[in-house]
Structures are given as structure tokens and as C-alpha cells.
Image (cartoon, rainbow, N blue to C red; front, side, top):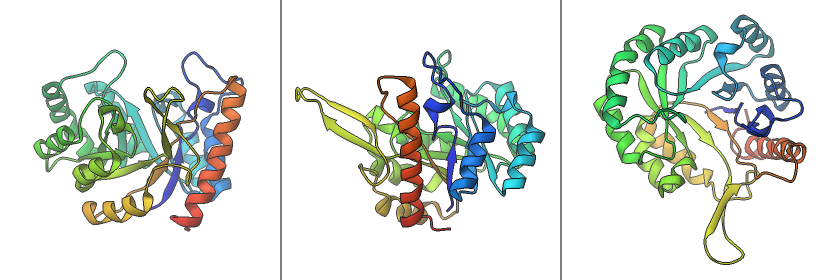
Length: 269
């Protein structure tokens, strides 16, 4: 398992709707940061759309820096997924990480099955595995059922350690249920704190080693359950600061701290 960074390591730096950074982080800077960290995997997701990037320039620069690329997108429109299967193939990505829902389309379970059955032959032709990310809406068992229905097809799970908190499922449960299907991993540090009023809790990110993400338990468990190798991509939930400039600066500091911590403790190569 190799450590990587991605466009959601720097979500604020790339750009969040309504909060444009003064100097948005582009793919060239992202690749260079990975190289400076000594990290050799970069995942480019939907906040940095690959269909808007010159793929020849991207792959040439990644090759020059010795970086393996991974592709990501959002939404399961038939034409969109087939386009991205070909994009993933073109940049040499073994997987296409995909979040099912978009702001305008939240398909039900049967529509998801129908769509995936139509598009997965293109993924097989391209030699790309579709990696469905556990997000806020679907419980782990629902996604496991989807994997069972689609068994034999080039599909798996992009397991995010914190997303399923949105449907009241902790990392340990999600990993136990979805571990056998995992083909990609998103690691993010997070904390859960009671509000000062004691009336509720807040969940937000932290630099790695300062929160609840128990990699000592998770990494061996996934190795046991999945029986395959895959990459771990650092993502971050950085709390918004008083200004976008302060938020971006904090995000960069946390990335530096987290990569150093993860490389020293879990990913020395």
C-alpha cells in the first residue's frame, strides 16, 4: 500500500463553491507537492475535472516526476462514466473513484444497478475498476449488496474512513462490511467534540495523529479482508477560518504535518 495525495488533500486550495482562493491550486502544483513530499501517487478528483485538463501534458509531467495517477469523478450518468473510463485508461489509472450523488441527481438503488450494468463493459474494455466511494447517503450494507449484485464486474469500493459518519456508521463497522470489496482508500484525520453548550457534537478534521482515525487497526484489517494491494490517499476536512487565505494556509500546514507523520509511521517507502 502506497501513500498518495489528491485534489481533496487541498479542497480549499483547489476551490470550494462560494469561497474562491486568490490563487487556485492547479494540477501542476499538486504533482510538484507530491514529488516534494516524496509521495508517488496523486489522485485527481471531481474538484479538478480531468476532462478539462490536457491529458498529454498531465501524463508527461507525472512521468517526469515518477508519479502514478489515479482518476476520480462524481455522478453516474452513462455517457459521463464511459468518458471517464477512457480518461482513466489514458492516464494509466487502474481505478476510477466515483461518488454516486451529484447536487442534481441522487439515483435510487435500482437506477444505480441499471446504469452500472450498462457502463461496466466499457470499464472492462479499458482495464479500469470503478471504485464507488461510501458517501453520506448509503449505508455500508447497501453498498455491500451492490457489490454482490455486480460481482464478476470490474467494480469495488473506495473506502473513506469518515464519510459514513454522515449516516451514523463508524469507521470500524464500515471497514468490516466493505473491506472485502475495497480497491482504494481515503484516509483523513477527524475529531468529534461536544459543543461548548453540551447540546450536540461537531465533527471536523485535524492533522494526522491528533484525532480518531485508528490506522493501527484499519490498515491490517483491510489487508486481511481485501487480500489485494491498493493506495491510501490523504484527504482533509479543514475547518473554515476567518478568511479564505487563512483557511488555505492552515490546509497546507496540515498537509505537511500529516504527510510527515504518515510517512514516518505507516508509509516509509
